[in-house]
Image 1: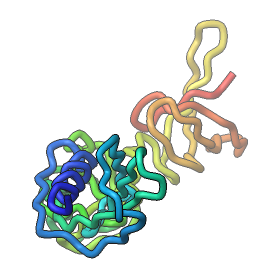
Image 2: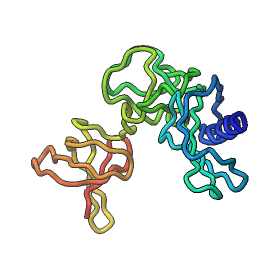
Image 3: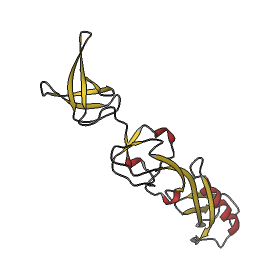
Image 4: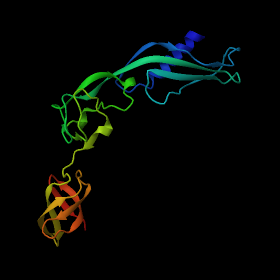
Length: 206
């Protein structure tokens, strides 16, 4: 029964590995046991109770036909997958692209603060703080690609009866296309809200 439970626990843990990951099982840890004097011959439920990927994953088994029949198995493993890491030291606001980041095979169970496996972010994000070389990138380290950044000189558009008027302005906040930003009209000094339309261009909200 013990060996069978170990195999069932291993299958349960494998099911929580991210798509495309490469699990490697290294053994089994100690487990708590309760009410197992009787053999379970009925329905055996299993549940992975460890809330995130970790080197030790606990699986809980419960037998519906035997009241109080509960046991746990601990599965030891590694989960490997390519994740984005910095290729060189980066300064704040450096872009994440093929020149500044690369994919390396890492053990996800050791990356408790997060990781990135999606290549589509290349060219779409930049770092919010300085980072060293070889750092595993996490979502919290990155900022959206901003068409307008705080302090940028921008063209502020206003529309009146089909006419478009453009004036120089300074961005007081940043954003991507469609985001709302605050800008200061360079001529009047008036601060208004606008929508980011393109690189360095914002349109006054009606």
